[in-house]
Figure 1 (cartoon, helix red, strand yellow):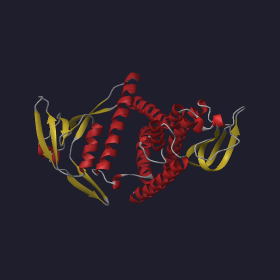
Figure 2 (tube, one colour):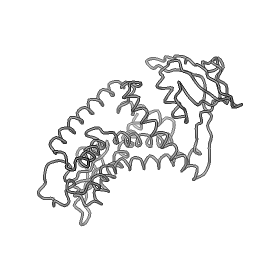
Figure 3 (spheres, helix red, strand yellow):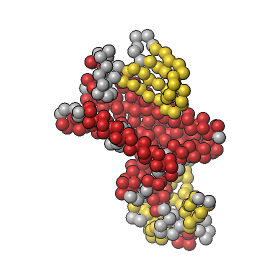
Figure 4 (cartoon, helix red, strand yellow):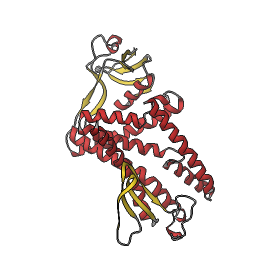
Length: 342
């Protein structure tokens, strides 16, 4: 349990610190006054300053992320800071880059970690070709055989294993129509009703087939794997968000800190490389979440910037802060809700 907790805190700190470092680096490049860059939260354990640098670098007690504090992020004016070093007085493109930098650094971290996973595991690529169709399973009884390539589920095109798994998860046990192409290149349509399996409080649905996996050795293959997996996961995340909006996926399917802790625990048991993959996946997840136009997140700030560009004048800082505060409160309530479900 202690190892799992340490692993969970390390993953969280790395992902958030990388995100904040992106903001910090581009703020410095833009000439914005940065008060502090911190790894960790809570009481300060140690701090230092570099020569000819106003920023205070610190490590804090609680390893649950980090932060960067810049001049001009709010409507409060610090008279000690020169106006030209205030974030609100920078050009539109400079502010845009500072805000989006955290997201880009999360994406960069995800790609690097997926590359490491590719090198360590020979870049596994799950196809949509079936194998090990279990005898007497729902898939077997419906007519699915080894070597069939699944191309659509309920008329939704399937072009990756990630998309296939998402569509099966969204079905939540409902009967589905599978369009497949057999090894003779003949198309057929089969209907599968999965078997419901209940273990304690956990319910799952069994179809009874696996997917063929190909492996490729080498650095170039690991690079291709990293970018292809990154792209596939991005698509699945945005599809999941769309399914949440349209009601195909309920809020009960979301995971908060408790759910993430459980996933970390499972990954830690499976080995170090699984923890690396999970860290990359969560970093990508954080990046996508921060792209959404939600007040209090980077996406909300980007939305305000875009509105400013269209209007030609900045939004009233008081209204902007009010919207961000309301957004933050709603975000905290959502986290409490999903944590309770977890």
